[in-house]
Length: 388
Image 1 (tube, rainbow, N blue to C red):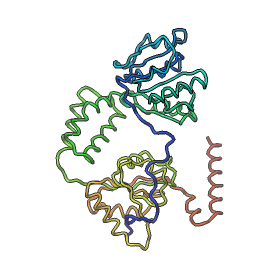
Image 2 (image 1 turned 180 degrees about the vertical axis):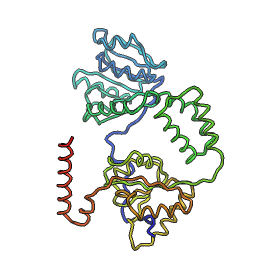
Image 3 (image 1 turned 90 degrees about the vertical axis):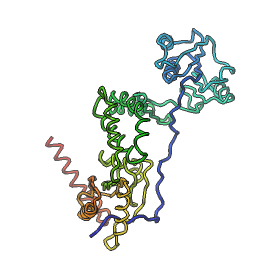
Image 4 (image 1 turned 45 degrees about the horizontal axis):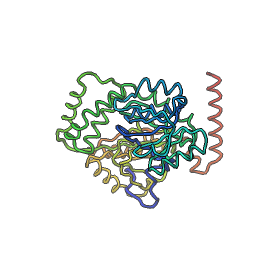
């Protein structure tokens, strides 16, 4: 029989776990911290509102004449967070305001004032942002989706703010309003879960089930008690057996992965892949997962050692994902390998991938077949549109 590919190979360099980042996303606690906002425009008011919503003590430096309607309205409403507050100073900013500040935000009329504000804050060791002047910013404000304590931030490094806003709108539709309440439940039970469940598979199983509920249900009264009862059931000692999921990576485009494939990657302890699997696909995997580069399957090679290694990983309680190019569900050898693992008591699931009908033409160098396939697809599409 032809089993799964052998483990591991060092013939190719391993891909980076994280692709290059334009900026480092951080979530900064500001409760009880003093921050400086210089200027009275609506833009400055929005930044001040965000800071106060995080529990900061926001010191606003602007004369009464410079305060816009947005700022007057904000000061009348107060901070969204009970720990947040506004302290207004009826004067423009000066070098002495930065002493114990955690952040400084300036709304400056021209580059000369912006540079002076930037230098003064920098001399005091305070991170600074000058609104709409990226050359005088040490940090940025992104678009946010607020389901606090769940907070999603989106940045395009200042290149396309309109794109960040469009992404935010998409995410808003994906995160149900009840997510805020589920996050509160998670906070309330987290310590009890950590005490009762061992790190690793036990905890991850519980939180994966928790997340499934969070996306389809609204937390009802007594939900914490029922969740802790489930924790106790999971804490009962039982034989530790993992599972193997054979995931079809399709033609290599990460956007063509199924939702089930992505979930398997994000739940994996170990990921087996070969040179055909793109970095974009691996980027969707859980960061903590161990990644093992394996040789492509060979009909002449003895794959027994590799399959035995997979069995050993699963029997150690690991969730193993075998990434396979194309569609493993349509591959007889893969189905045979899955049956072989099942006979040894290892749960196996095959997640189909998108098949690329043109892959064989490329690999065999049959350009004419490729062109004919492409023309046939185009003709079929024209007929489908006309019929519609």
